[in-house]
Length: 242
Ligand code: UDP
Image 1: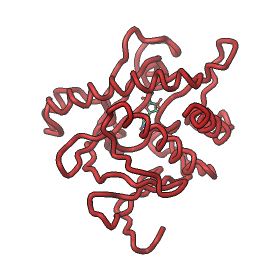
Image 2: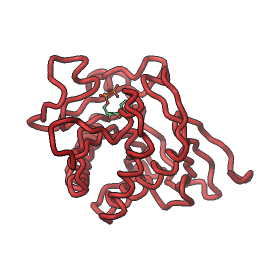
Image 3: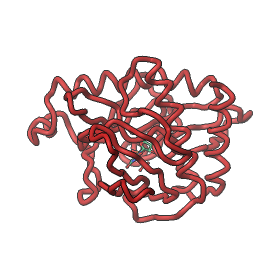
């Protein structure tokens, strides 16, 4: 990255740099993969580029569908320019199908299609291991007003409707996904972070039998192999569709 840009923040999968325009940031997607709160780590050459390209296409599609996002434009294959936001420390998970932690913490069987989308909210705090949090606790911590929380929940439901049909068109089942939101300098709530196979579970609907074929980070979490092949397949299907 050019020396003119100052590193503002480095996360597990991305680096955020300053931009000449102080309302913007430059986000570089890294090849690093982490799981289980970074207890498991690896590097996959090309993952940063794939997630950046996939996220960019999805953000563009969401913007066309009137969802406010931080995305402005791609700078190059693994870097995007985005609006600077103050990230709200909540991880909003929406589930259409039961899998992952939902099945570890309840008696719901993996693969159960949920009658309606379930929203689980987690506190974004690595030290505390991102615990599941309630509306009352969010209130108690003064993290965000209940009005803004309702706004975020409604946006998440709308994003789900848009993304579910988007992915269905490219023969992928949107099992669940995690979103992060933030405030821009005018205090508007924008969707931030990324939308990629790192934070969405996507199952292949081209599969003829009932076996689950994950084309997402579960390939790394569950040691299935073929992560880059899976992410490339998603990128290929998106580009064919758009
Ligand atoms: N997720 C994420 N970051 C996290 C935890 C979860 O992006 O720190 C995503 C994950 O990829 C999946 C969804 O949120 O698409 C639900 O994950 P779950 O709560 O089932 O957790 P996991 O099984 O990954 O521990």
